[in-house]
Length: 171
Image 1 (cartoon, rainbow, N blue to C red):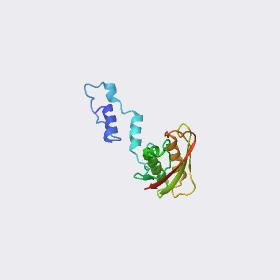
Image 2: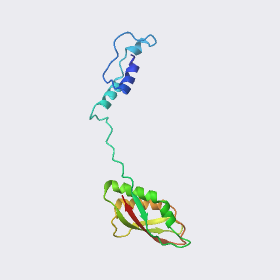
Image 3: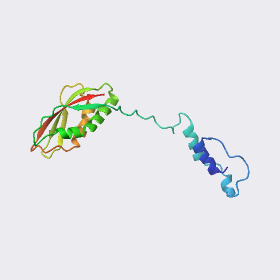
Image 4: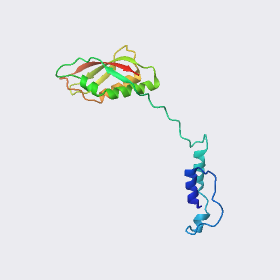
């Protein structure tokens, strides 16, 4: 077997440390190539990846965030010209994603949270803060929800408006 084939065999079949059987090289391979052993870096690399506890081993990966959480959106007062409820409802998936990310570090997180959202005249959420209290008042959750709500466009309120968004998170 040629040196090239042995390297491939090392990588794919895990024959770390095996060498080709001695003998004449195949007729189609030039003698200089057939006489070479696998390149030291390639052989060491293949051996390092198969050795347990080696520095080349992949680092452990973090567990994925929990899934399956849900959010219920409470009554959001609005007017005919400024109704923020459809925007919040349309972005429930992002709110649930934030909830599941927060549950990765706090699995028991669940319950109520009221957000105070300040919407400017252009429809941008310029401030999102949690009102005091609420069993789901978690700093990581609030920070993620802030980013999610500041990324969406609300209807133009005709000036500044403060919207209270009551949320109920369940695992």
